[in-house]
Image (cartoon, rainbow, N blue to C red):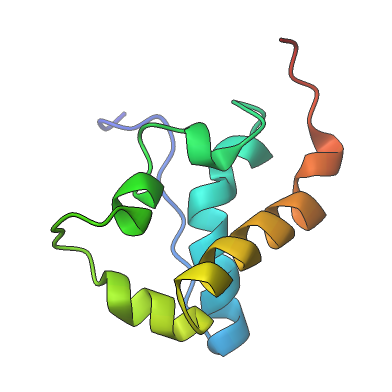
Length: 93
């Protein structure tokens, strides 16, 4: 057995819609797996760095432009996370 229990799966991104869904999936993954209710609260994500105003090595502006702008980036994440993952959450508070 290697370092990881399971190997990571790689999937080729075939089109623009798939890329958009993949970006959202990366940030919404903690919600999908029931770790928390709001992906924005996950401290191990790049989300906070992306929406912050400080310096970053992330290609923040390019990603915002992909979604239209920063506000659309945020709105798309919120809407798609709710659509795909919120209905299956069973987190006890």
